[in-house]
Image (tube, rainbow, N blue to C red):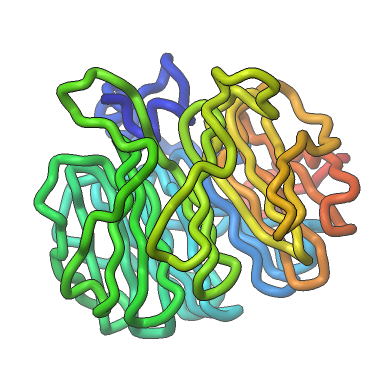
Length: 345
């Protein structure tokens, strides 16, 4: 079955080509690519981090007005970022890559994950307790801020794409075949919940869930293949909130890779420039008024006052300063070695 990487990178740079591609980049002198694919964005107050291909980490401390390249120390793909405050953050990536900073990214240190599996999702509950998930059913946990990681894998050869904990005890994982796992005891045990779209491996059908969003401790959404959206009202039962894009009158037929919540509105982004939005509590989803080229949009995040970013393939960055009412594209340019990046809009 295809992985998340093969969907968001595209057929030319799929997972099958990842090993040789990453290896050649590892030995090159090329600086982290700010015009390559971006996979994740994270905002803390006025600070923003964007992660992507070739170990790229872009940083802005002024809501995207200026940008610098932070040195990640790797050329492997960085897929997801999570920060618990302005200084402490983690990034997960391909081939078991886990990075950590305690100074807002001025320096990044590699953490030993104990695996070579691709880590698609990472979520820290607090400064000490964190989770990462990835290919071949990989589930890792740390209660030391990532200094050591323990293998908590579920025992199934299933790609896991996203993990979300709403408390130290309660968390969810979603992934390939439409599976949903839930823990009520801090990950000591994982129970497979009934997913309305789950299919078996032998069925030959494709169902994938790529992202999880919990705006509060009980209501959650899962986003996936062909625009499918699942919802839970209590964290126990899941229902289809938006059907597969093959249905009539579908708001989108495109895969949904990233999601975010701000000021009572739910957002989801995906392939071919798909951006959809819903008023929380109303249920209906509609296409957002966003002018984007038909590229894969892989992640979205908002700051507390409504500034936000959408990032995607080929260096695409969209910014809003008004809670998503309007979005504008940022284009970054190198100012030379050690001089940071300039932007045009």
